[in-house]
Length: 164
Image (cartoon, rainbow, N blue to C red):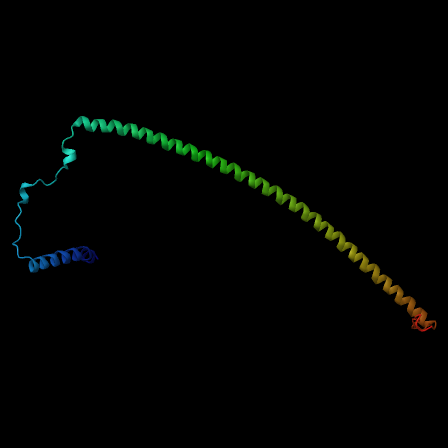
C-alpha cells in the first residue's frame, strides 16, 4: 500500500523532470549551466525583513496587542448582539407558542361544542325515528282493524274546473 502511494506521488514529478531534461537536451544547443550552490545560504531572509531591528519587532508586538484587544472587544460585542438577538427570538417563539396554544384551546372548545351538538342531534334523530316507527305501527294497526271491519281504500279522482 505504501509503495503504491509513493509511486502515485513520485512518478508524476519524475516523469515531468525527465520530459523536461529530454526536451532541453533535444532543443538546446547551449551547454548546461554550472551553479555553485554551496556559496548560497540554505535559508535566505527576504530583503524587506533583514534591515529591521529588535525595537521594530517590539513596536509591532505592541500594535498587535492593541489590535488583539480591539479584536477581543469586537468579538465580545458580537457575542452580546447575538445573545440579545437569541433572547428576542426566544421571546418571539414563546409568544407564538402561547398564541398557538390559545388558538388550539379555542378550537378544542368549538370542537367540543360541535360534538355536543352532534350528540344532541343524534339523540333527537333516534327519538324521532322511534316515534315515527311507533306512529307507523299504530297506523298499520288501525288500517288493519279498519280492513277487518270492511273498509276498502277508495282512490279519489281529482275533479278540475275544466271538466265541469
